[in-house]
Image (tube, rainbow, N blue to C red; front, side, top):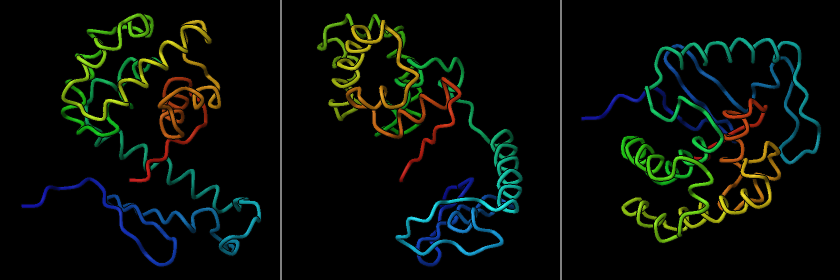
Length: 193
């Protein structure tokens, strides 16, 4: 028996990716180019949206946000969106199912409730708490980055995306997630899966 999926991703044509929501379809390659042709593949032409595309993008954005509001799962890491909590959630969820990740996230935050507590803990304690999540490099990087943040950034995760990306284990996706969720920056958090 197949599980119901709230959305499905399919491929259509060359480079066109479709995300299908009930009663909503987004064709990513042509979205910005409604009313005019897209630049040739490999072209360095600037991506400038037409007024029609901008209007349509806003309409689609509203539809996506409405869909999310009505269908989102209630997950513990979606409340209290501090940079530290978002960061820990994103690192745990990299290679962990959401159901398991939610339980382990709560447990991790009980043991290491702040960036300072994490940074001051011995790495062995962090690895012990991480046991069962696998990919232990994630835990080591989290610990190393926490120490760097304490020393170089006064104990606060930087708002600057470049500074975030310079920390061990923080790539474009996690930096975008922290920037957009915690700091309200217009940064994409694009998952390639």
